[in-house]
Length: 430
Image 1 (spheres, rainbow, N blue to C red):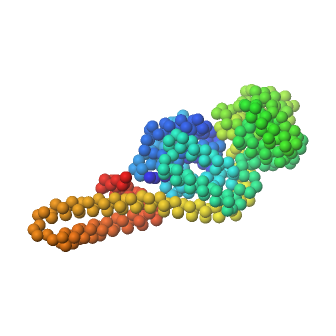
Image 2 (image 1 turned 30 degrees about the horizontal axis):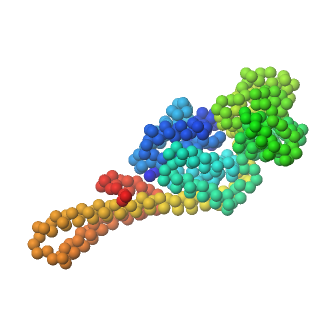
Image 3 (image 1 turned 180 degrees about the vertical axis):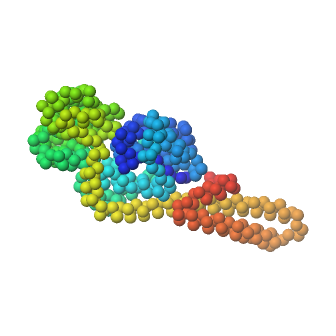
């Protein structure tokens, strides 16, 4: 089996491209079911976060989907023309695909280096694929190894120390504009996982008041009681349906929902500057797809930033953690080598065995065919003839077997193994 990944992330595609390729859990499950119908011989995991959309595929060496087919599938599923995002995509195969996944799960490839949410997101994507019947034996082994790599990175390095989340980066971004929060009212939109992480960082800044808006008020109230109330920071749940009113009272807005469409549009906020008496409003939108229509930033004294604008904060994070990267990469490389060797041994061993059995059976059949034509063949002669055929078979197979074992060390043995299987019609033992 070949392992392939096709995707785009915050380094290769701006948020306006990423949001068009984003999948919520329901859309992800539906896409996997569609992929299974179109390419029944493949396995697949679809990972979609605020910073990346990636399709991991395991398929036979000469099977499908190929790279262009996978890109076409993503485009068709999201209703996007291929040419609109294909320049932003990347793809990796075999050992490179493993290395990429291990870096993603270990948060080496994140905007915020060492961020804590990506591993949970990778695990959720794998669980969804398994429930959809798309994570078979091969990808199960691949992703279980990725989880082990992430665990080792976080246990043996200091990569996760300090603020390691997009929500934390958003708060740090706001700190670059406001030196203190003690006289600021903060409106947090969204009480999901990202909202909770962001809220915890916000509360460290001791704002004057926190307004929490969520489509489900009961969840917002539970978050307020569990996270805000123990800190002593004034906080209250406000109606989601009256967001424009809350914008009038806020100094800082951070939006984190998973809405498929913008929840705040310029047309509905045209009088916001006047209602605010033209006081500055900082809006940080860390949702993908974006919660805030970009045109809102054209309103007077309303300053809108999206997740890509947090890169300056992320770069500072990278400088602080750069010394940990070398150790992380060492851990990843060790696991890549070990996994490739294990995977190749699984393919090489059965192929060599099947090849020996195939040629051995031909030799046996020929020996049984010719023996009746020989006169006065003793048991000793029969044994010598059988030994001769065995030695001939072993010598003929020595080159192919050695080649397969050598290629196993480079991670390319499956290509040669598959060719031999196709040439001789070999099958694994049941």
